[in-house]
Length: 141
Ligand SMILES: [Zn+2]
Image (cartoon, rainbow, N blue to C red; front, top):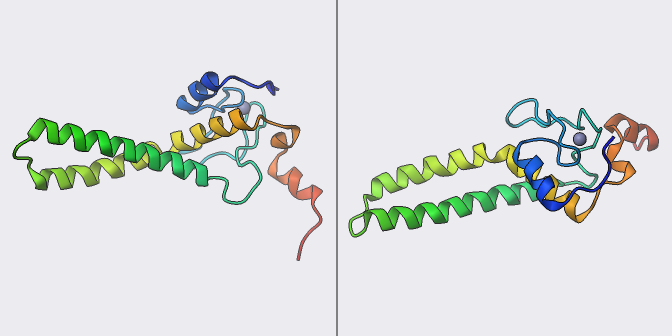
């Protein structure tokens, strides 16, 4: 079981290959949008505790979209100035933004996990299966 801390570049490289940022194992996803609860290789639990954990991944996705949007606007206007075809611009922008948000979705999750692991290295609690964690807590009614 790989519990040693990896450097930020290694974490990001694993995330960009859609692998477990902790150990590099796979698969991490069962489909483009559905993530496994734990790494099948090292057992690392992807959702690390607190509610709203994936808000950081949404932020990464938003940053990717805004970066692509800024590059797209700049490139389009430079290429077509002084008479940009605005109808084409509007349509292409909508299609591009939808494609980026869906296409980047799994990467936003693995990249956020890599960032989180870099800031907050894995602890033994990160390797418990969801069922194990539920058994440890008394039932709350
Ligand atoms: Zn792993």
